[in-house]
Picture 1 (cartoon, rainbow, N blue to C red):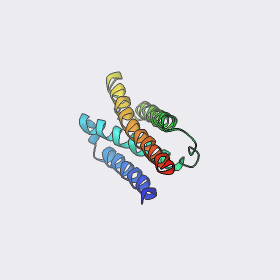
Picture 2 (picture 1 turned 60 degrees about the horizontal axis):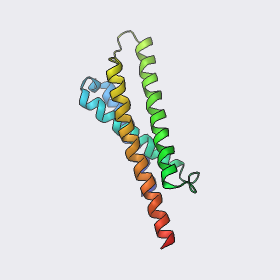
Picture 3 (picture 1 turned 90 degrees about the horizontal axis):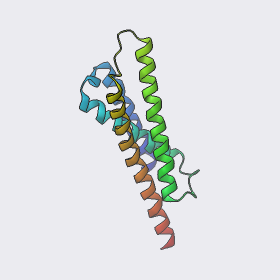
Picture 4 (picture 1 turned 60 degrees about the vertical axis):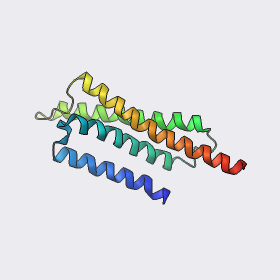
Length: 132
């Protein structure tokens, strides 16, 4: 079940983003912020799942840093994509200035930190179970 959860959350985030664009929900500041946090949570959670074997020997703290860093990198790429879309689509206005971009990145950080924290906690519990 845990294996499927990361994929289900990621699929829900993808669907939410598609609907947000189709229904112009990004105009609602609170929705944009929530979607940034949820999407980066989903992406970082999926990365933690996909990299779990490769991160097997990493300490919980190292796992947190790696998953959080992945989430922040994904958030930065997202902002670059928004900028590119605005630059090449005349009617687009996704980026509303540096304040909005920084807010997006802060919400991205919150989502990534939550996923990284859950991943580190899971690793800590696994280590405790093995040592018990």
